Structure formats: C-alpha cells, structure tokens
Image 1 (cartoon, one colour):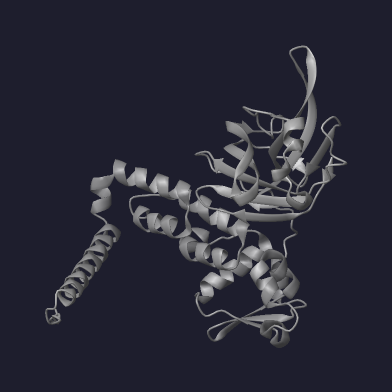
Image 2 (cartoon, one colour):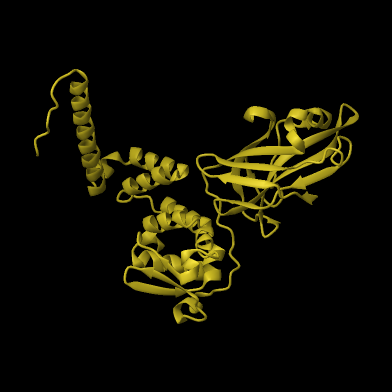
Length: 348
C-alpha cells in the first residue's frame, strides 16, 4: 500500500464531502497488477479517516477478473476504531465538467475493527476504469466522497496529550498573551498553534500577533476564553454544560474540531424542554443536522410543555415582530412601485 498525498478538501454539513486529487501513474498502476494507494489522513467529526483506491483480482464465473475499488477507512493512531460507528458513503471518480464517471456505494452499516471499510454494491472493471482517459486529465485523478453518519454520533477519538494544565495555571515558559477585555491569560504559541489552525495563522512570522506576542479576543467573555484555554491544555472542559453554546461558537471560529464535536455531543445529551429552542437555533446556525433532527422531534413530542417556556415565547415574539416589519416594508415598496406617496410608519 502506498500513500499519495495529493490535495484534500473537506466540507462538513448534512453530508460530509471530501475531495481527493492526486497524481496517478497509469504506467505503474496497470489493470492486471495488484496495487493500493491511500490519501493522507483527514478529520471528520473528530474522527481520523483516509480515502483509498485499490486494484484486486476476484473470481467471476470461474475466471479471475481485475476490479478497482474505492473505499473509506476510519482510523485512530493508525489503528481501526475500537467502537462501532454507523455510516454510509459513496465515492465518485470525477471527469470533465464535474461529471461523475464511476461510482462506488457503501450501504449504511457499522464500522468496527473487523469491518472498517464497508461492503460495496458495485465494483468497477479495471480495464474499463483505466481506459477512460476523461477520468485522468493530465494524469491526475479526483475522487469525491460523500459521507452520512447514522443516528448514533461517532465517538470522540482518544486523546493521548499529556496534561499540560499546570503550565497554563503556573505561567511556565509562556511566550504569548491572550487579552480579553482588561484581563490577560499567559499561554504558549506552540500549544495554541497545535490545537487551532486559526491561532497558527495568527502566530506565523510577520503577523501582528506574532510580532507583538499578543492575541486580542473581543467577541467572547473571559469565562468562555478561559474555558477554551483549559480545554486546549487539558483536553477537558469542566464548565462545558453551562457554556456549551458559546464554546461551540469559539470552537467553530478557531477551527477546533475536537472541541466542536464535544460541544455537539453535549448538546445532543442535554436536549430538554428548557433547552430545545435554543439548541435548535444553534443546530440551524452551525448546520448540525443530527441535533436539528433530534430537537425537531423533541419539540413535536413535547409541544405543549415547550410552548410554555420563556424561550419559546421569546422566539414567537421575535419572529412575529420580524414578520410585521417585513410585511410593512413590502407594503411601502409596493406603494412606491404603484406611484403612491411613501407611507411613514408611526412609532409604536
């Protein structure tokens, strides 16, 4: 098996889309030889994954035939995941004008150490695949994978980081200051950069944050930033249940996938009459499809109790006020188009 880096693009949402483009040597990867290539590792919902492509020989009608299979594998520290995860996926070999030329599909099933690649409905004949020049423009191959997780969320991967919280609380060897309002948190550039590509970009050479050794955060409360720093240094968040909404926003802003997945799991576990309205709004804003489904179902099953909450009443009031404003705006614009004088709204 050979690792081919190429380029990887990962987009998360209702479907998790991964695009892998890499150099494909058709003289080396021939139709009648055994070969296997895999992408670099990427992350989805806190889980490490790779895409792969292989040529294997199978017995068909008493004859051996070579087939090309594309596949998704879930890994943690280069080992198959220990816990079962239910998902389905499809992989497409792309041609000109973004057309899907060949496809492999895996039905919904659970991944485990014994079965971590899934079963395919269709295999592609190797001769047919390699003879299609449209799939290999300039000897490049693009595979696009669409992943759908089942109702049970994937477990968070194990974290093997040493507890570094004492370095934060004691201020040992710090070289950057995080400023929140009038308060400061002394931290370490290498630790922040290792956990957040956004912090890494800020701290690169010739950037203001790097030159001044200061990161200013003015869109989150000190308590939220302190909890985020606690998580970065200890892989734990003691106050996550009380700060989950703000922590989710911070994790999204600073591209901290593991913390975001932990916040999502906390939200899923804490859906209740008093939280479901706010959680549904968070799910819509951050495209958390599973949380949105759970919140919608919970509201439908407990509609009377939910409608009695202050959160529900506030939501109805806000949406009603927004509707009235939009309606009045529409009427004014309609009158202007008809040649009538503009109506002025009287203050309430």
